[in-house]
Length: 221
Image (cartoon, rainbow, N blue to C red; front, side):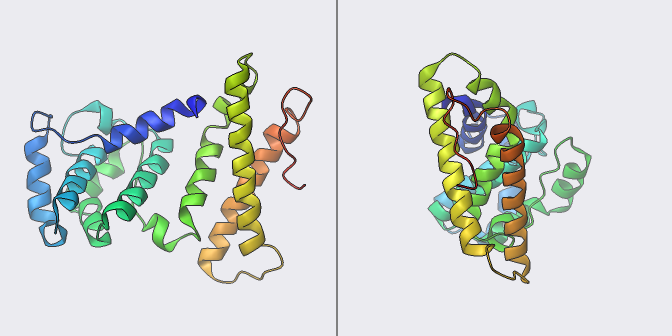
């Protein structure tokens, strides 16, 4: 979706290969060889480790990675999730990088505090859907401003995107939250994200943009 270009640009930045000429390259190698060597079994694991060390922005002065914003964290988590699924990354490799003493101290001092709490694996049901909805919420103003433009092709794609988000919300809500006493933490946190998504959607879309120009569905239909 072109209206979410910053999201995809950030994702691609996280997934960019590390080059030997990159600032901080020797630091990345040193961290992976000392902190995570027991969890690197393949070249894909090593490549992921190098990218992750770089992406955390603590071992070089490259502002592209050291000056992240809060909403970049969710994109970083999404990149991690996809990388784990694609390359069968050991979760211990991830925690070793996030929680070595220097990375942890560095993250506390940064503008965006992207800590890793096994975000996808332990906290939410079907986590990739959760991050999809969180990206929607984080970019709500971009979405609304784009809908107000005169570009029909972009508006059509955006309305398709909104419909996909509604489909995910309804599927997840019906499965985990409707007529269910969710007393386990994972279901409870999942339903809290879904409620937050619905509140955002209702506040900005149902009230302002449900009209003849923008065919935005009612979330309760």
